[in-house]
Length: 371
Picture 1 (cartoon, rainbow, N blue to C red):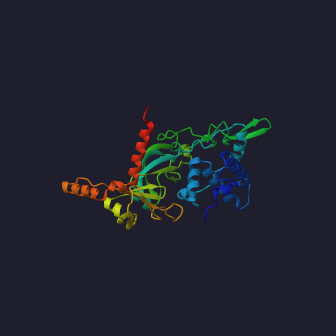
Picture 2: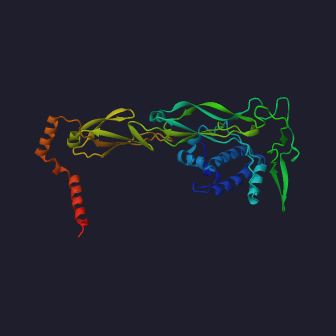
Picture 3: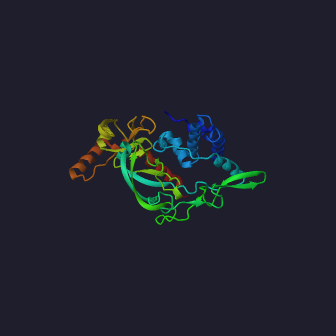
C-alpha cells in the first residue's frame, strides 16, 4: 500500500516554514490523538501525521524526502516498526509551553543520532552491496537491561511529583501540567544504581552492523536506519543511524547526478578523416561514429545509457568527450613524414581557431601599444 504525501497529510505546502508545519501538526495531533478521539480510525490517522511531522520537522530528513520521496526512508518506517508514543498531555503542554516559553525537552534522554561515512566504488553504488561497519557508540546495558538498577532492587516513588511523573504549575488563569524534571516523567527514582552503567542504563562499546546498500545511490545520499544510533539513557529510545554515501573517483567514468561522463582519446587521423571507434558503457562496448574534422573537446551524448534514478526506471545519459592525442616518441622517419605532410597540404591554413587566435593577439598588441 502506497504512503500518502506527507505535506498533504499535514495540510501544508512544500514551501511552508517550520513554524507552519509545527502549528499544523499540533492542530491535527490534538484532533486525532487516541486519548481524545475514540473513533476507530483515529489511531491510524494519528500515526500518519506523527510520521509526517517527524520527517518534515527535521531539515535533513525533509530535504531527503523532497528529493527521493518515501524511498529515502524505506528502511526506517514499516507497519511493524512504527508506534505512537505521544501523550495527549504532551501535546497540550507543548501548545501552551510555546506561549509561556516553556521549552523543557521531554525527550532529553533519547539517544543521539549518529552519522557514518561509507565509501563505495562506482560499481558498488550501481549494483548495491552489503557492508559490515564497525563503530563505537552507547549501547543498552545488558546487566540491568537499560533500567540502571542493581539486580534485586527496584525504583522508589519520586517525592517531587509523588510518583505521578507530572507537576502542576499555575500561571495566571491557567494551570499547566508539566513533566517532572527530577524523575524525567517516570514517577520513579533509582536509588540502588547498576554498578556497570552507573545508573545511566547504557555503556560505551564497539558495535558491528551489516548494512544493506541499495542500488543506484548517488554521492552525498543518506540512508536512515532507525534505532541504530546511540542507546538512550534510563531505557529511553535509541537515536537513528545515518549512512552517508561517498562515491570514490572512478578510473573511467565520472558521475554527475545520473549522467556519466567519459573522456575518449582518439588519434589525429581519426579526428581529421572521421571513422568509428569503440567506447565503453556500463554493459560493454558500443561503436561511436566520429565525423571528419572533429575538434578536441567535442561532446557526444548517448541517451539513457547513464545510471538509473532512485525513484523510477528512467536513466541519465552517457556523454563522451573527445580528446585528440598527439603522438609521442616519434623517430626521425616519422617526423620527416609529418613535416612533408604539413608542407604538402599546408595544414596551418586549415585551422580556423588558430588563425583567429593569432589575429586576436595581433589586434591586442596593436591596441595596447604605447604612444
